[in-house]
Image (tube, rainbow, N blue to C red):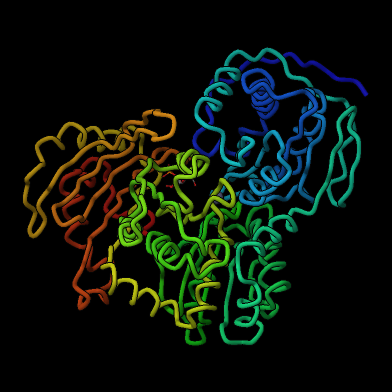
Length: 548
Ligand code: G1P
Ligand code: ZN
């Protein structure tokens, strides 16, 4: 078999963001586009990251359109670039948390995950590619910067001239001098879950019919994982997992587990025959949504409840070293950390900031308001892990989801929370809102809006306590004297125009007000946010695209 060196010229838009390089499928399909980026990744791995030749790479994706084609290209390029072995999930399937698990378990040099997470798939949808390092987490900025720098000067890529590799049966084959090991993408992950949670207690609950559950895999990667773990290993009745077959276009849906997009599940969980517990995960299996019977658990509250109940779960019975949450995530977890007398770190949006804290042993658990929760068992967020955590808590406490939340709020107070997303805005208009805020927040301190008084405003900046690196400009925060907050930031993951996110949080200690609907409790803050930002005037948008 021959290795070809193919001349190429650089593209100028291959800057990987916090979640890798994410573009429309048609962009990835244009000649040399994927190849250029993969070559930039490989040269970075071997040059900048000093990987030994012959090292191992993990490879897989969420099964979306173009997954299989991309895997064949990457395998042939890996063989031509000096890898000794590539471990590929059977059928090209590997959820993001499972990739993290496998990289860590087999101590591989790194891994490539093909996914655009919760973005729609199919020929008109999105595709993405992300490089993870040996700790199982997303590559840090210095690595993604090195990849980007390479991508701008690339003049050739290397590829083995070989037939496609069969991906649909477990086993080992050779590709030139490289081994390709096709493995079961579920078993290592399922084993890790069994080591953390009390499967016997959960099995009692589910197989015994004490708790009826519905898990919506949203036609995405977690289908096979949920079938194996929830139905086969934990005995939930067949059919408890819905939309379980990964489809290239996610059935035409938007595989994002929230009240808007997980409508199949929401209908069931709010219906007359609603089960006791519902959950969903996203395209690549790292996000989660938790529902009780006709009851929504905000991701911020979910993190707080999980942290407060951690010692009920075998893998966490010694307690937590600390908790971390992203800045826009509500402060509900902070209150739990305070009660447990452990630190709570506030990081910029994006999972990569948690990795350093976990590697340094400073935090055990972390979460984001965007339906992401996890712990140091991997270095990614982990959708099924969060679901199993809840099931373990329910198996011990034998209460409804709603009553667990009500007790939690009675003890810690309630942080009412909501996020408004304005998608597909003209970039200039969205940036206009942000600069207007940045130019004017200095004058807001002390300003009074009804019962709310502004304590301070800033543009969030974070100094990593482990490596001292500074990330500034991470979102405008308006913080009120009672702990309520409004946060504005621009999304870094969209692929069309700009997405402006407005995060609203109102703290309420008074138990008699805990039953309020979040939108009612937040109505004043929403008004204040629109007034201060001039959002409607500047964007022409009357309503947000999505409210979560
Ligand atoms: C969004 C979420 C963020 C998450 C990221 C990747 O990023 O807000 O919390 O880490 O997706 O899943 P954003 O589009 O806001 O930059
Ligand atoms: Zn995801």
